[in-house]
Image (cartoon, rainbow, N blue to C red; front, side, top):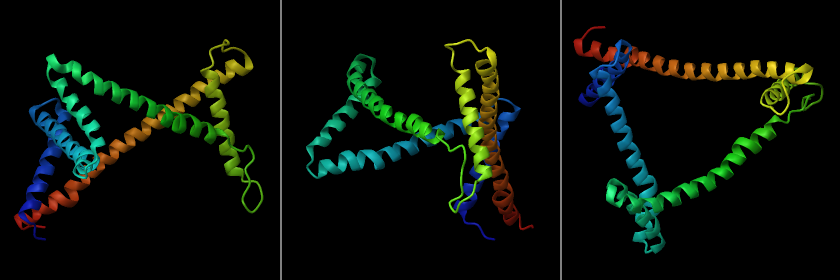
Length: 222
């Protein structure tokens, strides 16, 4: 297989930076810091481009060219944010910051109520006896629904501090709620670890399927 010069350079850079990141296993070192700084710099540059082509150009530049003067308002607010770079004029940037914080808070209240409260409460109302569309009891779904409702109730009991966690209902329920929370947190942690392991597997496969064949092609072996 023949490789173009740009492909060879790209594979070498990818392999080198991957090894630089893996070098952190031996401790903090200049190679890891180099990869870290490159990653942060490239990310910042990428999001600046996304911000310009995805927001500034369609929302400010294009409307101003079309004669829509309302686009001057976000333009002026954006320019005022740049005054934050100087301590003497930083007070000017407080006005657009207050506008951004207030607008973001107002929007997030609606989104949070919808996605994290209303949707989750609606999803918690499960039928304790589930049926197939054609008729008959769906045993598997029924058992899952019972586990979900039972775990939800015991978890809520654990966080209910208005009464002592004693007795059959609140004492036993709170103890079971702790187990439910630990299982949920463990599953979340396991999912996070699994995602990181997937990234590691991806880089290992990169060396096996892309980097090493390129080395073999250059050396004329394999």
